[in-house]
Image 1 (spheres, rainbow, N blue to C red):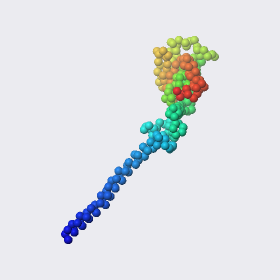
Image 2: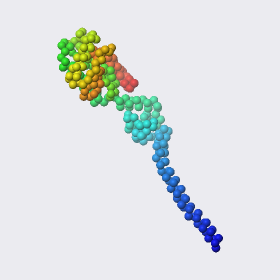
Image 3: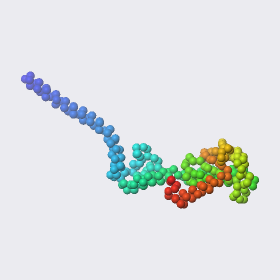
Length: 250
């Protein structure tokens, strides 16, 4: 009778532990699998995009771009290029085009800079120079429409003989140009165009460096530097008329 009791006790113990061991093993297994599911999902999506097994969903570029945050000129795009296997050159060309469109000045930004030039012209007109007609002209990136949002304005003041488009003889020497720069700097501050002017009178091309007070746009002002105006006109003609679809991006 005692032998029978020991056998039944020995057989009963495994029967009680098997469910407990099985339940604990199942619990720990489920806990390990739960965090692994989100980690594998993006990897599958990236692999599918690389192999082109299916069309990528809208918003792919908002989440990943070579493992880095997507640049703003690609936000909202489904993909670059055409077809399931686009040519790499087409993809690069399209991204460059998107970047140029993104970084190009808006109509509002261009109008704001045009207003700064008009304000400069009003200051010049109020100086009331005798037998001299001062005209504010721009060159460089503003005139060619290639400027960035933080670019300055390159401006030259042409001092024409009244009624003509010829530079006045009295303002053709460097000494005369230096004196006019200091006079113009004082007038700009008096008119409230700016609060500070830096006159660089001893440079090869003497200039004034300042910031327009309302917009904060930086301006470099020279006198009678018409060569920059002419070269800007040629460059703008090439980028807008001769090679309108390629030269601007380059």
